[in-house]
Length: 559
Ligand SMILES: [Fe+2]
Image 1: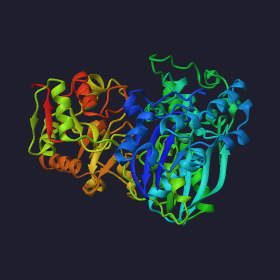
Image 2: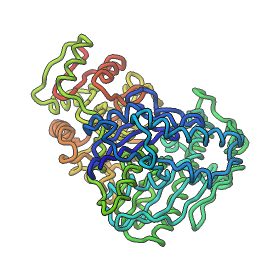
Image 3: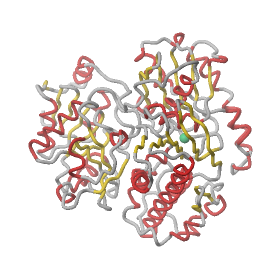
Image 4: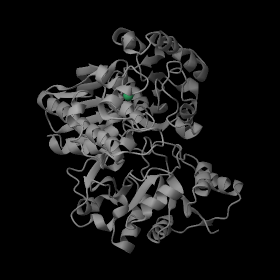
């Protein structure tokens, strides 16, 4: 049985494929088109399918379009029609436009697959797809499930329980009760794009959450059952967040100066989010219990919230997939359809983040030669790269299969020395062109993580850079480049079995320096993470990296 899963309804367009109960591949469309997030969420484009990601997944699995038995699309138009109210839009005519374009999804698939799919095209409710993307790969039998994002068909938060391979709803909170939308709205108020929650999260550590705590409570009210959002207070239905100007003071213009009240708003938002999520978890503890929890939805990318709530709750085993945001629903929808088959077991292979394209040495060399660049072949790329990082160089590390999800986890990464206080500024100025207030993350040997960071209970999701962990007393000063303003680091633990080459690199760095971690940031410069050797070479050149390792092939700047 061959199942293709697709997310295309809003943004983070992506595809995934399951063959005979095994997750074979998953990838975001942005990596191929070089357009961040795949596309903007517009009413006129839910039928624009991630054609590149789909053909990658099928090629990787050795399938032709006619070999695909079932196709899953992570949005259910029928549910949208019954649950979403057109007056929620600023202009209610937008909804009929959206529904009209959703009807074209079948035509778009017919074009790509060379036939009409009919009943073999399955529309999977968005939040069920999110829930499945966490629950089935988690390996848990019995688990509480929490999905929190902007919006699916009409729901913004979904509480469920997983048991014996089945996901059962407990409750869904519909619009306007959307934590994801609050983050988008506040991001725009702070002069960033609606996609820039990560910037707001970085900024929050510098602010005082108390300044706007009470004002924020007018927007986001936390109660016993979870939380509610006052749509009029935040002004969801206005295109511009002008209500926030009245509540918090003048917004920041894009690229304008960041003022203290902007930073305090970010801090209050982070604090209110932690409180709302903690309340949802307390409810799941009461209603589901146990120690296992699966989380998904864009809000599950918030490392600070994940850490805060995991420490405060009774759930000690937490699974969040590497792609908890909308891209992950491509895999989740395929998983739902797979598990709906008679007698199906949850598929294997879905917990690994390394589900994207990989390139042979021949393909790497062809790209290097096409670029006319000198290169050498290393005996040990891991050792050579570790030495270069320890000498203060910025190194591109391009290995194996690309990560599925927004974080580079050692296969499409830029690496630097965490010990040097100036590493952050050099990376920001020379390579990444990003704001100084944003933290850089460490990749640490799994067996040493507890020596350096207060990890709490370690879970498989600690391999996906999803938790902010305080550095152990006295150690932060030794690794200043990866410690954020609040004394935490967004730790990625690296197990030898999960990524042997990356583990070897960090081990060599540890042997030489006594520090079992390197700084890891995504391999890109203000664009989607690199996918192919040619992308990597272009960024190596454009961003002025000191070296680039692709498999065993090494390019250095002085060559
Ligand atoms: Fe979503």
